[in-house]
Image 1 (cartoon, rainbow, N blue to C red):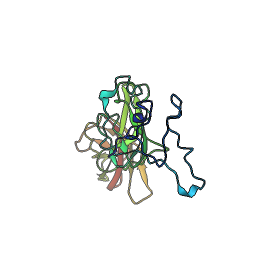
Image 2: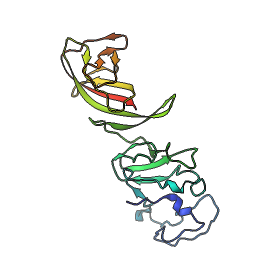
Image 3: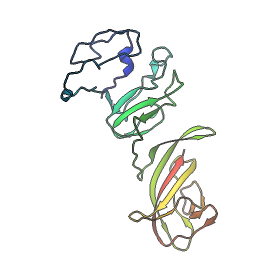
Image 4: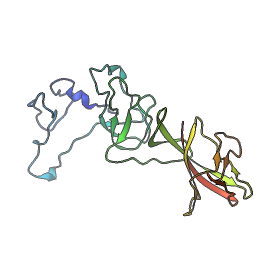
Length: 235
């Protein structure tokens, strides 16, 4: 795994051969300018040769920041704007910003206004939102909810419940650590039917009958059968 950080290229006023490999000469021709590396002049007459930047690659499911360097001097941006090419699928490491689901692709670290901490930072996909697969295990989504107590990560989980056909009470156990429901979608896989995007009531518990089917205004008895759901929640 290559943990190559752009800041290393400019840690000194010059480019060092141990940090940069090139198919042509690298000259320090514009010190103290906005551009720190210009490859636009290293271009052949024919575009078929293909010039491109081989980007630093990182496994963001294992990557950890060296926070000891965040003294407000060496990296005063606290890595805000750092770009990597991620090679792995999974969640980023706890304690290295907001835990985020990632897939292979380009990501930048968004950590605005910080100089000594990465705690509130987040890896964001470049050019769009990465896809997240919601399964039967807790899934970290790409959504952050602003609450009165601060920004909260939104989680999701997929499950099923069985309706008796005579009672509104069904079993939708609360995931560990859940503090509030954000939303729910009740449907039947393999059909085009979405039964509801709400419940009449929900109790954060794992006991039987902790959910009551229906809308916020009335309870509804579902026909007997098995139903799928995706529960979105905060912790």
